[in-house]
Length: 223
Length: 223
Image (cartoon, rainbow over all chains, first blue to last red; front, side, top):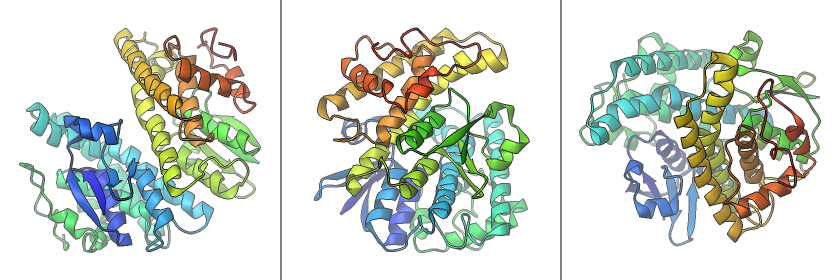
């Protein structure tokens, strides 16, 4: 059985969990707060980042969310998520990078720093200037999703792909932390509400981080 | 013919150039300073990052260095660089992420900010505290390369892979900017000197960024 080292608001772990669930791969969750820098975790991943997946019976450890997703894509045929022609696959990977890197740096990471780590680790108040800027950037990224969904059924083309899972994973964490204003984004909201009702997504939406609570619309599939 | 949008000290463009040369794929270089935010470039890549490759005859544009590398790996058989079993491939991708993300954030990015952008764009002096910290982190990353090369001929295993190209690309930019002290890293230096003499690497080492000059050992294959 796979063990997934993660914490509930890690967007990269969420992407891996969505992929594993869509593919029907069973896993146990192991709670890991990477900022605590546990020795046992550093032995698994010198870069000290979640997610890490580990299979004790088969003695396999895989580090880095994109390496993990490519691994399951290569080894599990069910529900292909990086599919189509080489050009289609490049478009899927472009969007994965856009959400894993740009959306994370612009939106998810500052929200996690200000609303999670300052509360749990540093015992400080959030910086409202940084929060405003993260929400402004979230708005620009949602504009781009609106644009994509105006032209395609799913973010990277005709079928659901890992690009949709990567985007939904980042957005769900930003939404938990109160960083998303859905009011001007009808297309993005429609696309995201389809996700919220998927069986792969429901377990994520029901989990809570200690002491940090999401807004009321967060887990509501009709919101 | 492929066109590669890049600037000489972009480590991600260097990784793509190394891969294309190893695979024997011809390309033209197009100089792009992404911080100038040219409209034509933003149309190619809304994320405004290099590298982008574009093939006007075939009307293909590919964005993001990992998407580009996976694309050429899938479409060009020569010189496979993400090869072996699924577990081997995961190890290659783990190390690509380590250098693209951690080494870049810890070393290459601060060096580029302090020694390139402050000079070319902001007209400021570099912050010596940030430079010292980047060099301290470079030292830790080189320790890890020493450790890997003690156990394996190449970073990810028995054969040269995209992990080696990704690492050499980052290190070459850091070395250009004076951020690498090779004195305590015999294994890493031996591994890197093999690269410096490869035909794919020679053109990179001969290029110069305007007004910013590398240390004398930078392009010396015997250093």
